[in-house]
Image 1 (spheres, rainbow, N blue to C red):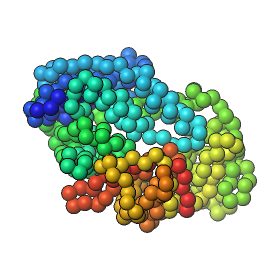
Image 2: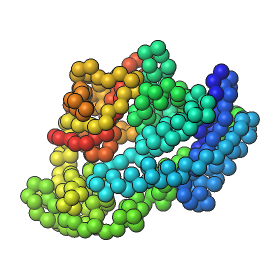
Image 3: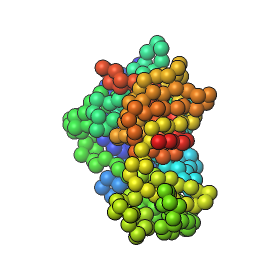
Image 4: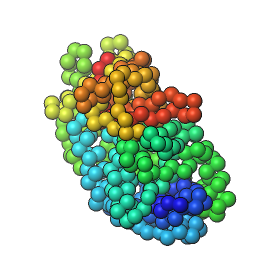
Length: 364
């Protein structure tokens, strides 16, 4: 039996994860992380999270499970480590993944550090991934349900963090998790999943960024000719691969749509061009992290993933000093600095996460 701190978001996945930890005989304490600086704002359907409604749902689930329950205020840390960094990344022309950073900095840094300091052995969450603890180190795998797999956003975790993690729902399809929640008498069984960015419940990312960064006008430039095609209000309104909302009213000579190819925060230029110019064949990543605790030893055949769902390609990866170089067997599109590239080893029992790095540059 282990002392387990169950992170309970107020959703069905974390509630069932906590229930399974209890059923496994662990000494479980539930905790809800208050991350929002405006918790009085209730969620609307599947938008947003971290509201008073979510805290109440988590508390009711803990009551049903008969476990102690607490609310910990991490709003300040979340604002600094996730929200402020999200804004800074966009201002610098990068494309961040706030869910990935939240897992890295909040749930498995701030929360796990506090849990270990209080004498807990592990943190349990409702993430969809599988985790085996072996003598050679932790083995993080994709979830059974490919549509819900969250191993990509967990690939930023270190081996030490994974040694103190439990992901009890990763071996079960989502539909079965909802059925199990109902069977256990958990009122969140049919609660909608949270989508979008949790701290932007309106879904208006561009408006959120403009409110904080203001307007920073710059040119929209044809990448091939250098011709100025229009003006924009700030590079934070764009991501690599974006097609709509470019502010360009003059069609390309061949009539084909244009896409954002590059963002230059220093000059303020947004470069656009045809879709094939988005093809990326090499990715360079910085600050690599290894799930098992062992780095690459020479070139390794693997599968690279650059988005939470999709964006996969066979690849060869190797270390180049402190950088990770990933050569793709087939090109991927829309890969931007600030994203994460996760590496997987194909395995009959479920693809194994090797590690990840933050994309610093790409080339065709």
